[in-house]
Image (cartoon, rainbow, N blue to C red; front, side, top):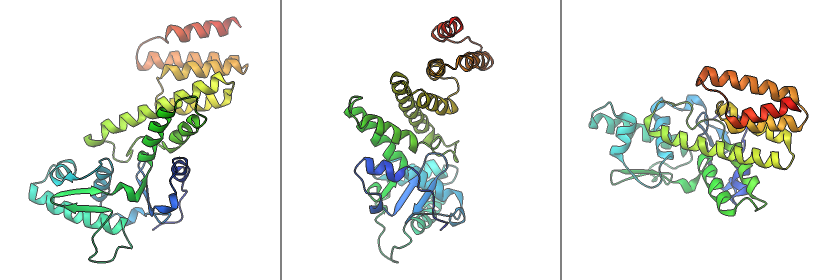
Length: 274
């Protein structure tokens, strides 16, 4: 195990949802680089015997309930024969259990990683995972509506959890690409909602922050460029707003061969006339 980690946003997000972080011995961060914490200490990179052990964990974390082992074989060891895949799976599962359950007594069944009847599952009730918290915050925020005083708090907790694309350190696996894209869109929608609220309520610096964070992920998203220009204009930063328009125009021409939208052009002309 490594040094005490920067525990980051997981405990705050958990408490917002009524969960007590100290009830969980295993915390896992899936946004950005995979990071695993046991009893508040990060598992050292040297503790992972080889990359497929982490790949197995990544795959299991994306699924609820039992998974037929053949699906695991295809996803992680698809280039091997069934017998070789089964052998590699058994070894990787053994290593993963040792990492995630260092206190489990020998010969006692695992409650966290359950393997029975040629099916395997990870027990999500025993772990805190940023992706799961992120999705639950999104669902509950959507259910409560924008008028609820907790609505923006939940969105803020959501975006704080998003440290980067899902499994950024394993970018080419087909089984996580669609989920990675879906979660990024959820993140951008939450940022957009927060930016719009900040702009409407006169919190212009907060609006700029949300827009800049979103544009780091999606540089071509025009709604954020528009709000950023509006916020600079509202703060009296006319030159910044105009410069941003010219930078955007150049970016769109280079990347897509198009001009800014008519809405952004109108805003630019209004700022010129100020």
